[in-house]
Each structure stands twice: as structure tokens, then as C-alpha cells.
Length: 85
Image 1: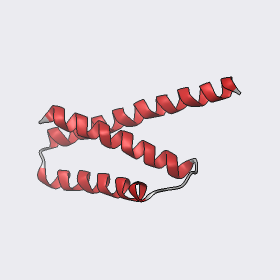
Image 2 (image 1 turned 90 degrees about the vertical axis):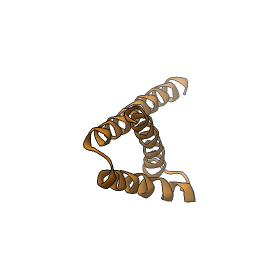
Image 3 (image 1 turned 60 degrees about the vertical axis):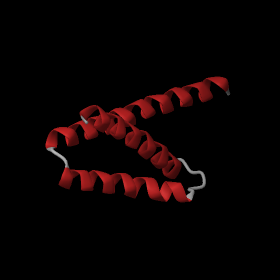
Image 4 (image 1 turned 120 degrees about the vertical axis):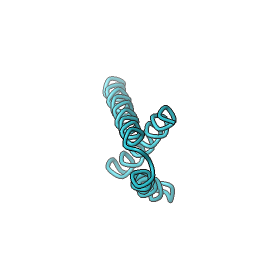
């Protein structure tokens, strides 16, 4: 269950980064972007009411890990764009 929480958290972190990147750096926001953020925070809120703290901590760790990995990937992508131009 704890490994599943890490995986779900990482997926939510990646999806949140993808959505925030779309909002911050422009581009057309599609319906899925308006669903991902509220749904992921709603899931965390519901999990907070239903799950033990140990699983919630792993869910949060997974989210942070997903956000960090996507941030690193975005920086690498920007560096490649700057170097290629």
C-alpha cells in the first residue's frame, strides 16, 4: 500500500507539473488541465480523511519527487533549446 502511495504521488506530481507548466508558460489550456489540479488536491484531501499518516507521508514524498524530476527535465529541455538556437 505504501509503494502504491509513492507511485500515485509521483504520477500526481508529474501531472501537476505538466498542468502548471501549461498555465505559467502559455499554451492553450484544455479541459484536462482544469481537471488535473483540483482532482489531485481533492484526492489528497480525501486521502487525508481516510488513510493513515504513514501512507499520506509517502503520497506527499511521491508528489515532491515527481515535481523535482519534472523540474529537472524542464531545465534540461530549456538548456537544450538555448544551446540549439
